[in-house]
Length: 249
Image (cartoon, rainbow, N blue to C red; front, side, top):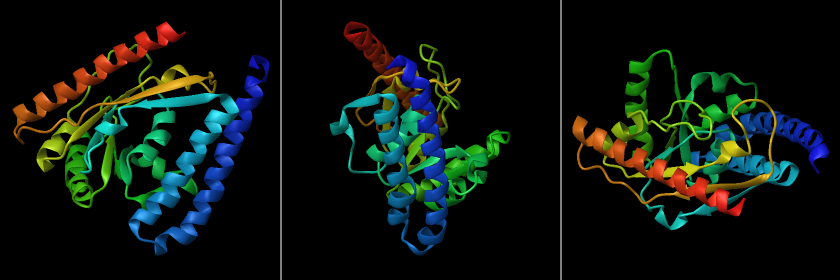
């Protein structure tokens, strides 16, 4: 199977790109006339599901989820480590409806990016750090009030597997300001869908969902404390995932 992997990966990307263009164009015509939850399901939910399906059946990236029972009924802030593109697709299926903190350049991608703009993402300019935090606080508070989950990758960018995990405080500041729960998520998707290059490796991504962490206040000390709890949980979960992979591997 290894000698066929480059062919499988090429086919995967061809199908991913073509479906994004076709689906994005179709959604630009249909989605503006639909309520938000339908828009999320059609624009993001279904296409993300298709991307995960293609990854599983063409390049062998399977997954298992531990801790689904930890997801509360109240929408909150998801703080996940960031290793690849895979988790940006997969987590859309677990927490619904959902919006993401994204860089605004993604909305300029023809067809799908334009359609994605209809799903209420929080698009920020990374070059304007302080303004981005204000934007997250303002728009994020409205989304939480609407019952929409917010996915934040507090590392800010994709990080290689094994690298130290360090969280910025934007996500926990948002949770504290709105007294919303934080759900920490850890995974090892970068082992199979690397940050660098186009290559893929068959295997099973382990996704661990932690218990809800509730803010103790909205002051700076509470933000720091909540961020520390989330960061520590993800670091400990990653150690569990890595040890588990070594035992099974």
